[in-house]
Structure formats: structure tokens, C-alpha cells
Image (cartoon, rainbow, N blue to C red):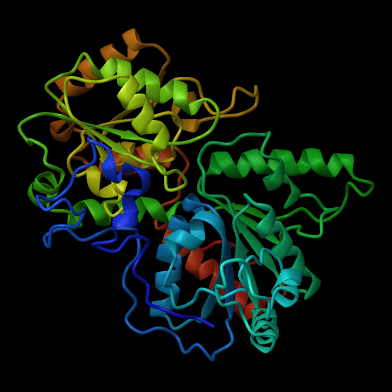
Length: 459
């Protein structure tokens, strides 16, 4: 049921890694035209190679239900730590998570097209379009039985896929714990709220968040939901700030990156300053990226890197770059190089609304959000902006001024970048608990040992 080996999404030499970008003039290539990695550069996906996969025949103690890139990368250090402690787990994944985790030995093989438990049985033995092999019915039934043996389930809060599986596990009286990976919160995110609603079959037994701000946001939302139910006194879902494991992985990735080898791989001149744009998606994203393209025309003597969001193929970015040509070459970075590695080269980071900006700021980089936010809802919040740590530049004039100031400040040499104490204080001021991986692992192990109550978080 678990197959392959944990390697990440794009292996060296996988020409599909760049998708529609492989013929774009801005995508970097080796001299022979391939998109191979230099031997000196290791693809980084936040995954530590496993020493030895857990036996496939062993029923999982934990099951992770993952959909999006953010929660998947957040849970990867946790799953690696559980592997080191010989805690067996299974992973149910779809969409971007399935791509990022392709080949993971813990990934549950579902019938082609299955997105919920009923599909697992109904689609078994079916011959999908294209003649791809499906899953024998006996194996599909064994799959569900093994999943039902999980003593605890961890799920993200972003998809119907996760809601359906959460309901399945709740019917079996298995505790379901949510993890919300983002630092920004949007009250219009209706799917996340359904996991808090006492009337929902997928109601969580506990919720882990990356910061106190997000924990308080959901506490207020749960209180509002309970006031709308017929039983306002129903038990409240425990909501605990645990931190964000990605922050720890970011520091390790930068330390493991050879900037000279990476610059050679990208074909950029280290004598020039480097600006990194971290991509996104959504209806307001094109305006933000267009603003970036138009502003960067004023900085011809810079290296410009664009890291694509894992959910997109880069077609939009390629189109907007063609419509807004720059005097300096732009590198649309293929996904065999993780954005965290690029921080080894980039003292300045720009994005519309990516959580990656928090990672950059806590590594001492100068950063700004650009364009309109993903949500203009009155009670949506972005803690970096709301606390005055990062600005939002909405026009070319203010963005130009920010970049000029950021490059003149030499961020790699300033006090913040060189002071772990200052960075730790900033993380504390933002209400982000440290040692998130250990906190989450200990919390989950406590759930496994008790299974009947929600333990308190421990460092």
C-alpha cells in the first residue's frame, strides 16, 4: 500500500519539472539544453531522507490528510521526526500534496479518481480512461481497514477532500486534529470554519496553529459559530499555537546551500544584488506580478529570481514577463530548487501575500508585500503588516523606494540578519512558538498514548 521512496517532487533530469516553462527564454538550462541540477546542488523540498521506511504491513498509528503545499511542507519535518522515533503513519494526499509527496513510502495508494472513502470501494477494479491500472477491490477494502486502525488523524483545513476523510475518521471515533499552516487569516475561508462547527460531521477534536494570532482568530470564530448553534454550550475545540516547522527547515536549508554553486546553476552574477519574487495565485495575483515586472525595469543591474507557487505551472508569469520585458534577465526558477535555497542569494524578497515572507523576515531578509492583498475583508489580517514589521507597496513609486532602501541597507550585514537574539525576539513578538517540530511531535505522541482527551502542548 505504501510504495516508492521519499525524494520530493522533481528529481534531477525530470524535464516535466518546468512544465510550460521549458521553452521560455527566461528559464535557465544547462549548456546541453537539459534542466539538470549541478552535482553541487541538492534539491531541497523540506524533506529529510528517511533512514528506513516503516514496514508497509504495519497498521498506521497516525494518518495525515494533506491537500495544499503549505500544510504539506509544514508537516514534512514532523513526519520525518516521527519516522526517527519509529512511529508508523499513513498519508492520504491529493492535489498539490500528492505531487510533492510522490514516491513517499507512507503514501496510501487509492483507486484512480478516488477522492473520498466511498470512492475507494466503488472505483476499485474499475478501468479508468486511458487504461491506467486501478486498485483491486480486496486491496481497497484492506486500505480502509488499515486506516480505521489509526489512533489519531492530522488534517489540513483547506479542501473538501479533507472534510470528507475527517468525517470518515470521526465516524470511527478516531480523534481528528487540524493544522492551519498560514500566518494570515481570511474569514471568508468557509471550509476551515466547517471544521470548527459543532454541527459538522468533520468537527475537530483539536486545532494546532502556527501563531497566537491565528489561534486567537479561530477562537473568536468558534465562539461566533457556537452562538449560532442550538446548543451554544457545546464543548469548545481546543486551539493551541504550536509554531511553524517550516521556519526550522528554512534555516537548515540556507545553511546547507552553497551560494556560489547555486549562483552558477542559475547563471547569475553574485556581484549584483539579487531580488526574489515569491509567486502566488488567485484573482488579484496578476495585478501584483504585473506591478513587480513594471517596477523592476528601473533596476537593470540586479539579478531577478521568480519562485513559482507549487500549484501553478508558470504560464501566467511567462505571459506577463513577455508583455513587460525587462532590461535584466529574469530567472523563472524551476521547482527542483526550493525557494528556501534562494534565500542564500536574496537579501530582498517580494510577494503578494505568501507565508514565505515570514520565513524570509525571520532569516533577516528585507521583505515587502506588493499589490492588493488576497482578501480585503475587514476582519482579515496579516500579522506582519498589522504589526508594522513588513509594508505593503501598492504602486510602482512606493515599491521602487522600498527596493532602493532595502538594497542600500545591505540586509546581509545589518544587525538583524546577524543577530540570532534579535530574530528570536522578533519571532516571540509575532507570537510564533519556537521548536515547532518538537512541540507538534510531543503533542501527537500524547494523543497516541491517551486517545481519549486533548493533552496540553509541551515544548
